[in-house]
Length: 187
Length: 307
Image (cartoon, rainbow over all chains, first blue to last red):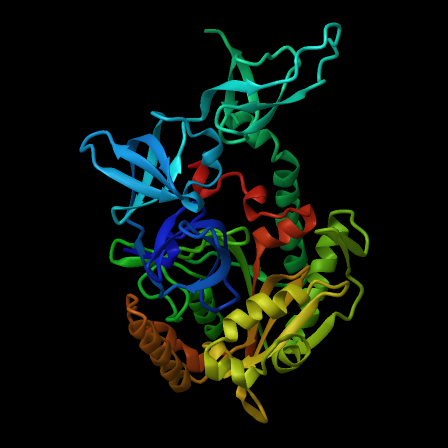
C-alpha cells in the first residue's frame, strides 16, 4: 500500500478500479496546514487525463501491472491477436488498446503486452522495427538536395517520410516512439 | 551532471545566501536582539496536527526552535533571534525541504502588528545590504518594497479570491485547499501581502484576537505568491495552551499519527512569559526571492537527492 507521501511522477496506482500513472506531481503545504499532493493522472486503459489533489491521510493500492513478451499473430475483425510465448495462449487487444503501435505491427513481431490484473490493456513495441517499403516514387536522378524527403508507404500501411534514395521494395528501420525514419536496412 | 559542475553552477546563489545570512544578523544586532542557539534534538516538540517531527533515538529533531526560545523569553530575555536548521518529516517539494533553515525571532512587549512593520524593515534592510533597490524581480514580475505593505484578513481574502466563503471552507474541510490553490497564487502582486487573522483552529500557539475570539492574531507574509513568514501574538495562558495542544494531539491521533509527549517544561515556564510576538521566516525561500529561483533546491548546496 502507498501513502500520499509516496506519490511521485511516474508512479502507477490503482484508483476506482483502474490503473493510473502520475504524469505531473506537485507538493503543496500552506503554513501550519496539511500536506497536499496535487497530481495529474492518466488512465492507463482509456488514456483520459485529469487533475486531483490528495491529502496526507489518503492511501493507495499499487496497480498490479506487468509486462509479458508475446508474438503478434494477426488481425481478426477489430481485434489484434497475440500469443503468449510461454503458454501459447492467445489474447486479444482492440485497436484503441494497440494505439499507434498499429502502424508498426508486423506478423510474428515480438512485443511486450501490458497486463493489468492479468487482463491485457496495451502493448509496447521494440524501440525500432524494420519494415518493407511497398510504394515509393522513383528517385529523380540529380535530386541530391539533402532534407528533400519524400513520402513512402510501408507494408503495414504506415506512411513515412524518407530520403529520396529509398526505393520500392527496400527495407527501412523506423523509430516506433517518434514514428520517424532511422536508416536503410541492407538485406 | 558531475558533482563539481553541479556545485559550480550554484556559486552565485551560495554567495547570495551567505550575504543574506550576514544581513539578517546585522539587522537584528542593530535592534539589540540577542542571537541564541538552542538544541536541535528535543524530547517533546510542540504538538501540531500537520507538522511531523523526525524521531532521533527516543527524542525528536526540532520542527522549530519555538519552545526553547519562549523559555528564554520567559526567563527575561526580551529580544531573541536564532537562525537554525529545522526538520519536518515528508515535506519535500519545490518550496519545501525536509531539512531547512529557519530564522525565528521574539520580542517582548510587541504584538503581531509590530512584527509586520519589523518584517517590512527586515526585508528592505536585506535588499539594501545586497545593493538592491526598492524592487525585486521574481518569476517575471516586479515586487515593490516600499512601505506599507498590504494587510488583508483571511476572511477578506476568501471573499476576494475564493470560490467559497471562509465558513464554508472550514465546515467542508477545504480551508487548506482553498488557501493553497485559490488564494496563495493571487498573492503575487506588486506589493507584498500580510494575510492576517486566521481562524483560531489554525494558530495553535497564537493569542485570540481581542473582540473577535474565533480568530487568532496570526499572520503570514506572502511575496510573489510565496509564503515567507509566519507570526503570532503569542499565547501566554498556560491552561489554554495545554487545551490547544490536547486538541492538536487529538487530531494527530485521529489521523493515525504518532503522538508526542506534552512539553511540560515549556507549559510550566509559559505563565512567566511576557506579552510578546514571534515570527519565523523561511531563509531558503528568502534567498529564492532574491535569487529569482523557482526551486528551493537551487539555493542550497545539497538537497536530499544529492546526498
